[in-house]
Length: 329
Ligand code: NCD
Image (cartoon, rainbow, N blue to C red; front, side, top):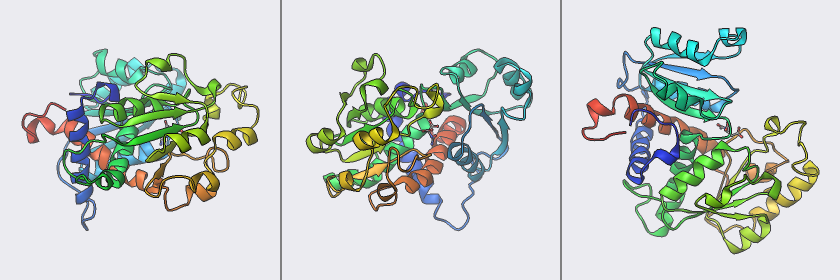
């Protein structure tokens, strides 16, 4: 595979290879010298048309740890604000010799267009497109879940080749606007986990019945009956709701009461259960400070794992052909 556009494109073997490679990358990151020579002489462009803190920094760190040259391009302050098109931006990157382009864009499908319109011959990594996909986020979530939970079922822990079969994951909150939820549903299903989405009816997308997961409108009931091993809280994406909450829920207080993760709900989770959040968090809305800072929360660890997962993705896309015989990622 030349690009990483959607978790729906990944076979189970490809997904497991990415997670295994991320584990190898993570092992190199506890060394005193963290930099590997793997992508020396290659250029990675971070092309960000939407705000980002951790994803952009994470990709930049990952590329630098592999010794690639990194060019950061953000739409703000570039000629995009003068009206330059995605095509002309892509042709410029091509002219500069980009080997891989990491793109975040407000339009769903923009990374696909960059990969397939023939403007560039670089590998394209989707770092979040509109409400559509965010494959490296789902991979780092799966990696984090695997590290914590697979060993508990008597398997090989972080072990090579392990999938997530038998694990139960609840994804809670603003599913409608969430590329993280879409990316996770596809990937977790491919890896054998069972997924239940929990959201108010107004924040459940049309067509969700075709997704490989269950849907619930009741958080308390889901926690009691589904008994998730991992609970993934989603940010309420007010910037994608016209006019603030835009009529999606009556008030922040009511949202928190029905769909927020607080100490009371946390106490009802199984002892081994973990809490994830992709960040940035709205503390006090979808997650209380107590829940976010509790020992069950693996939110900071998700960020650290993100670097290893992105190193793996860059490596498999850019160096995989030469260095990992026979793998097609
Ligand atoms: C997510 C995103 O941008 O889709 N954040 C991230 O990449 N860490 C989720 C969000 O913004 O809520």
